[in-house]
Length: 366
Image 1 (spheres, rainbow, N blue to C red):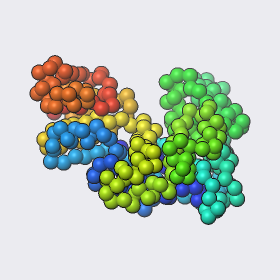
Image 2 (cartoon, rainbow, N blue to C red):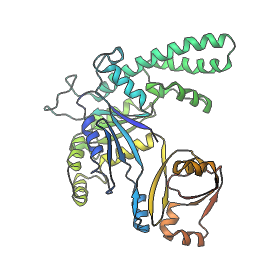
Image 3 (cartoon, rainbow, N blue to C red):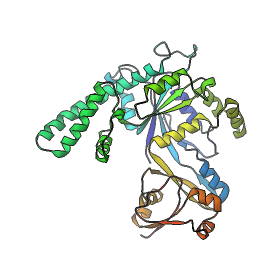
Image 4 (cartoon, one colour):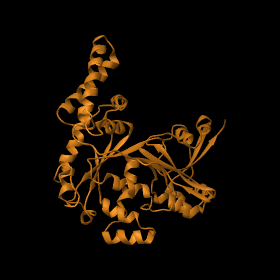
């Protein structure tokens, strides 16, 4: 799936360091292949312990993980909405992304110059937000003017869209992002999606902290948490410097020991990749056997035929039914035959909504 998360933020907050850690692939928990498409676009594996367990059970000839695309976007400066710095390129790159990883500097270090002279992650967040909000306000007001005319002429769909655009306009004028506007029903959610507004994209705030704060955060993180409490956004605490050290370690056991000494269960990059995957609204189902264990990517809410089509379009066109094994049952019984004998094999039709972690086999006819 061609869905991308963009890493954004002010200059010198740790964006590129984190991107390089993601691109190294060494911070991941399993030894799967990694590929880089372009210098600023990395397609990296999604660490998933479930796939490792299935591999241990099935001993397949190959194991293929799910992947997610991460884009390193140039640092924003004040005035980007007016074309300052790389503003036009920055905004265009964000528009092409489906979700945002907003990196905020939450550490003190006199050797790392801050673009505004002092450390204040809430202010930094507001700088980026303002530039995106200004651009969205231009878009919303232009679209609203057209919708109002069409609604006055009796267009019912334009009337519904105008009502939504009015709420967005009011929020933006108040300095709030569009994602803070509550949608009343599924129809509005569809209208909102089709507007492709910059501040309506799902966002994860990545608080880049010093080594000592990697496990529990600090006062800067607390301030960010308070500032975004009404935004319907997530927060991830990570130390880019720590992750850089982990990424340089070749041996998996050395990485585990290092993490334990830091008081961390897993690396921040692993959590970052997993959260990016979820932020994009993606879920995983598996196929498992002696030839191959593979993680397949679908959207949350996809039904069985759509999942079958991810493997091959013919599977979706000729879909008959899906045989479904819950991950926990496969781990318990070890083989498909044993699962079937225990009565744990589910047979599902076209309306079945695939659950994250399902192990599936499709029957089709073309």
